[in-house]
Structure formats: structure tokens, C-alpha cells
Image (cartoon, rainbow, N blue to C red):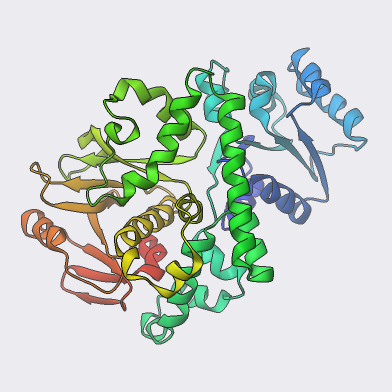
Length: 432
């Protein structure tokens, strides 16, 4: 399957000043497959080692960090000769052996000729538990679930992706129904690669749900296996409260919805753990839409989203018929699912850090606020074709942005500084 991150990996390979590269992301987002696929296609030889439950590797790295010695050990373990000109070395689940993380510093300083690609599903958790880290000696790429455009390619609709890349919206509007039908499928299937692959081959929605439930069960097992025992119940309660949080009209996170009478300090560790695992995204409110947005964030007001729209629909046991065919009773949560989808696509674009805005009274809210370093762009999200956007109108009247975006299940068109961007084209926002 096509992953856009592959292009970044090729740029890394060809960079004469490359450093060891770490792929960060939650479990099951396809990091291992991506590393192996890239290795097979970009190198003549691949040496793959997985640090999870591997005492031999742990012993190899614990007795010294000299690169030449480590390379010798890896050759003995793998039975392969490691030629730095044509071999990719893959370290998977590197957070399991802190000494392996530390060794990257010495590879960068003393043996930069070796191409070393790493992945760590629980890397953030490991670092917060005191694992030393080679700051400045490694590079990162963040890997998330497959985006909508990657989903289109996986389901044989490459031509539709190319149409959007050309920004030929007059032609794309003609084929709007194809985009909309695929988008509704994406709401259900989501972007977890195993679910997407199975759907692309079989179109079996029930099997997709079984895969998603298995992934969710694995996450729950991770809670018990890797989190401190006293924090595990709070992690579970916070994680399971997110659908109810998003179902509210005002999606600001409320600790009282996790458990009555709860306060921030009760769930700070649980939230940090889920963020470090890549399982949730935290979107803070900004007090004022001014550059840089980071300087104006309100740390006490935020929304939480899960990592994938398909997993969210699975968590809520949303039926295929309800999602694909429509249902009057489904109107309320459709907004939450759509906002989750938009956030997920924004997260897939480099250097975009989304926030949201409300006025001081909380009577007006713009779903997302982003910036391109020069100007601030408000984004109002609509689930269907209803274009009534009072909050966005109030924002425009007050702040006079150079451009404002409303995204809905409607065609592309622009009027003055308001751009109506179809939900199925939200990834083209990178071109703005």
C-alpha cells in the first residue's frame, strides 16, 4: 500500500548528512511494514532486529556502545554481512532497550555511514520513565493512521487523488459522489493499515470491525502491561470517556464526565500516558488568534480526540447501515465523527499544529485554528451540506482573516475571503 511517508524515507536515505531515523507512532499504524517495505525497495540488503522480549540483543547493547562492536554482533545474530553502502539496519521497538537508544548517538558521531532506521510504539512512555535520549543525534518522522488520500489509493482510486493534487476542482466536483461514498467508507474503516488492507481486498465491513476491536483490545492490554498499576484504571476511564466527550455540542473536555467530582490532577498522568503512546490528540483552545498561536494557548481548555476515525466509530459500536445510509438519530454524533476526521487529516500534514477558538463567553466556537507562519486560518467543520456557520461569521467580522475555510459535504467554491472546501478535499489545505 502507498504511504506518503515513503517519500520522506527516500529523502532521508539520499541526505549526505543523515542521522539515525526514528519513526514515532502508536501501535498498529504500520511502522514495521513501512520500514521493511522501504528497505526491500531502497536497499539491496536489510538487517531487521526486534528488541521486544529479546535478551540476546539486550545483552549485546548493555556491554558497550561502540558501533564496530555492535555491527559485529548484529552480523553474528542475523547471519548477514552489513555493508554500509547497501544495507539498511532496522531497530524495531527500540524503547525496550535503553542502551540501544543511547547507541544511536555513537553511530551518528563515529559511524554515520550506516543507515539506521528505528521505530518505537511506546517511545514517549519510555522517555518519561527516565530513559536517556541522544538529543540532537537522531531525526524523527511521525507516523499516524492512513489518511483519506492514502485510503483512496489503497482502494484503487489513484486517479481521484491525482485530480485533487492538481487542484482541478471543477472536474472533482463532477465526481463528488464518488468522493463522498469513499469518505463515508473511510469514516467506518478508518486508517489503520490492517483494516484498510482487508477492506480493499474483501469489502467486508464485519471483518473490518473485528480487526478494529482486536486493535482496541491490544491497546487495553498495553495499559495493563506498560502503565503504572495505580494509573491503569484512570487510563481506561479517560480513554473510554472520549466518545461521550465528543458527542457533546461543546466538545471541551470535562473531567467530570470521566468520573463525577474528578479534577485535573486526578487524570494528568493518565492523559500524558495516552498522549505519549500516540493514542489521543490534545487540541488546546487559543485565547486570541495571534501569531504564534502557541503563545496564546489556554492550557485549561482543550478537546481530546482518538488517533483514528475508524476506531472511534468502533468504540461507539456504530453500525455500517447507520453510517453509510444515514439515520435521523445519527445527526448529533455525525458532527463528532466529522471533526475527528478533519483533525486526523490536519495531523497528517507536516508542520500543522491545530488549535480551536472560542470567545470569552463560550457562545462562539471555531472548530480548528491553524497557521502557516504568516497568517492564521480558521476552519469551520460541517458534517453535511448545512452551511450555516454563525461562529465563523462572528470570527470573520471580529478578526478579518485573509482567508477562512468552511468544510462540508458540498462543492468547492470561493467568495471573497471565504473558501468552501469539500470534506473530501481537506488535505489540499496544505497547498494554501
